Length: 472
Image 1: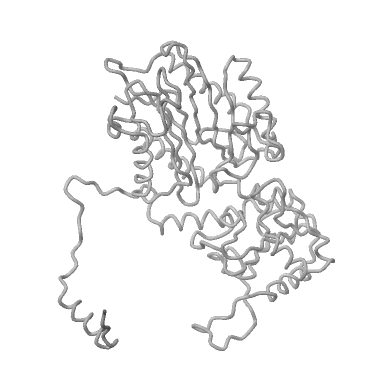
Image 2: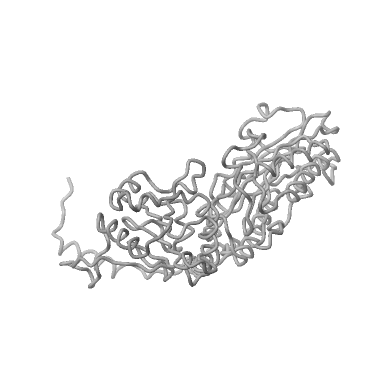
């Protein structure tokens, strides 16, 4: 049975213990163990970058998108822990969740007069929550608070928020009120049923009659990226390449001893040690001469002569990468991979070239897929294409260019069109019989991130893999 000291005695005992404790000294890593640097800077430095991007992105993309979609008053309402998918594209890096309820309103005051869209035409108002570092005008409650903390004004709450929204709508008298509701795109379906019900009841028939599903507005805003972000993304891709080459090397792999799961957790740990994140569990696959995938097993020990494949990603400053690279584990006496395996990779490269040539702003994902597959078959390549946008989300906003199990097109999600300033993960595979393996088919799955510039031109974020990494 434990006996408890009175509180005053307990505090005194703690103070005496603290006085007697040895002074804290800095703990250095053991000799030979390197301190891993933060390749992209501290969290604070990254937040400064993200805040600058946030304001510029809202100023750059929102005015034109409001006009393009015919919406002059956009309402984005959400509650804490039930955030709209557009949340990370309109809020500060210091904001992790919505505040109680937050209603973000964007109004284009120049639309009615037909003036050209520009940043000075746009009003951004937050009914609840903060100004997000000064990019929104935060409106507070007028309700007095008897026990206010630090003299702060009360926050908007409950029905008061809906009435504030109604008052704002009556003041601005918009023609079209955009709401985030969609049966096709998750990115544009962030308005929850409860929020829609509460807003509709408060606004009444006069204003709900002006509701229009925003559809392309949040979709394209989430997808659109700045040149400054492109430069940063290039550095992220450089880091991915450096890490995949290190992982697929004798520095990490000991043939006959290392299991694929060890590489998975090597990646996870290296990412965490460098102050980065990832948006999915990495995977490592093995193809082996004379064996099926079932015979190889789920967590095989890597052997000489194996073909290795990884699917990995990084998350930094709310941006994501998605990459698949391939390697070959050299047999004794080999200095290079067999010619058949190099041909297999070349077929996947040829499919990448076709995809890069076919992706153009204004084309839908389904149109691009059809053209790519027609050209692929004409070249005698056996492959599939399943590429997706990337950026703030790993599987990002925008048109899908196939799914691995939908090579005839993706209804709805493949009908959206490619736009400038969008990024893509060119994800695909080509399967090729390899003579050195007795005609056994080898699948070369590749994924590399690319950028569609503001001018519509396409380029790799860094480069694409045209040579197998070799594990000696």
